[in-house]
Image 1: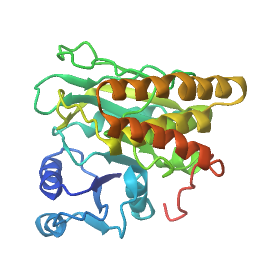
Image 2: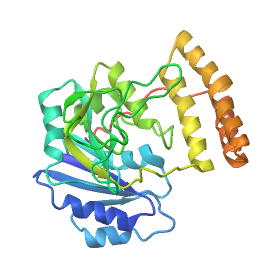
Image 3: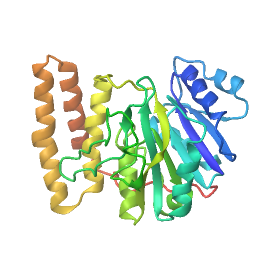
Length: 302
């Protein structure tokens, strides 16, 4: 059994398109959970009306990426849980190769498929990650923008997981914990993968599976909301996952070089709103010193 969890926020029609693709999959044992993250400008009831077979949960407030996904976990009965964006569509046989990785290699906790751009046919968004650099807290998506000619049809270890589609072992979650909601948005899946790796597990890429993502390859999402959470998450990742001299070096780099350079860049572009968001993100860390470590435990119901 695979439990499928997706989060809806003001995108009910997109979520219905996602669910239509799932009706065509060949994998026989799935249960699907749709969590509506307190959508303020939407009619999420149409999801349950059109897809009565799914499990539908509505939250009272927007819990963010991790929080929204975690709401479904106490109800999931699967051996594995597929966390997948609602703005994706899936081919018929995409799930079997992902399950195969976790079944054959118990030390693998998480696996992501290759991700193609939905509106740019046969073009990669993701084919694995380089490791996150411990000082700069940056990594790179392999294959980004390349045409798929079979060059990544491999199964291998990867530097981190891709949150748009990741199959995760429930047994590993019981031992390590679930995604923290401290990030709200961005970096939480990388943080989670790092915790799994430190516990001795591996993170895998499965090039025999593909998911289609409706994010546009040319989209530049520069809003104060995005810049605040990206900047805040980058520093928070360093605080949670680095230790000793590496932690000191990373925080000095981020706070004295990387983010000030980012602020200057936005000021030159006359984007004072983005500069203010960057400063706000830095300031958040000066006012939040406590309780940033660890992962929540998986409910005993699972």
